[in-house]
Image (cartoon, rainbow, N blue to C red; front, top):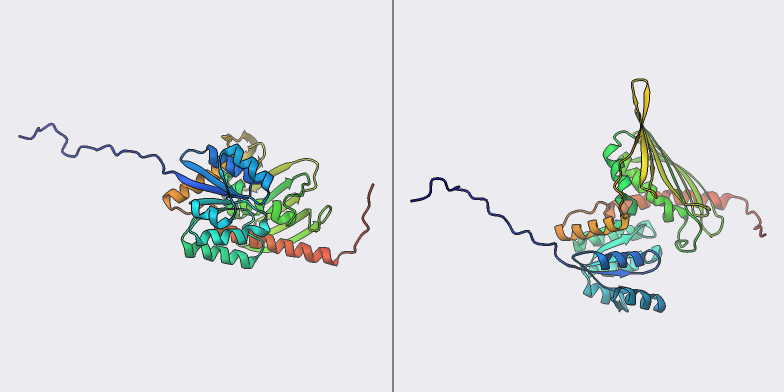
Length: 335
């Protein structure tokens, strides 16, 4: 006779399996790509299989540091990896990414997505045709500061972004808009969630053949205005964003991962320090990328978003290039 006290529907504990191991590679292990390799090597349930790198000395250094293999072609790397970070210069994103996607490799493509609109369209089409996870490395979207913004911004009316950095030759294959400003363009688009109505931009080339300092004023169809200042010839680093909305003002520092919020209550202004749990944005970004591969979910920053942000950056760049071409050429002064 069945025990009357026995639960007719006993709960069976399901065995929780660890996330499956993913074999990863890195194409390009320069100043940024080395950190992709470092994180893949350190991350659980992830194996850094190897790298593709054209510089012999650099390839030897990274392979010895992380005990991984050097591949001598993109195709060889793709044949051994399920996921690859594309961290080559921007003008090589397209020729590196396309054959990897044809091999069904999932890709983390560093920002900007690529060099022009045509390449962007083909990358997006290839990702969808091959059914791969393709994420774009807009790293600030994974900064804990950005998570706070996304949780607390509901009606932005005016945004000011300042992003300054000292000059370095790396990245000068593109202007400062595609190099640095595009970070803030992506964050602002995510916060405002409205089509762009108008753009006014100004730039100055100081140490390179393209703009090294740029300002853009972006007006959105919902009335929000963003003023973005960017320089790669600054003596000091700065990455700050200020957002104004009804009855509230937020000031956030992306470098220090801290900020404050001012709110109005009755006739009083109250200041609140923002509680942000600090973390390495690149680790969070790559962790999210691998989670998307395991679950088949859509990346937070997919190639469609990367493409539309690139198009806005190109609109700004083209306006600046036209302005520079129309200016009087001034003599170059040396000390």
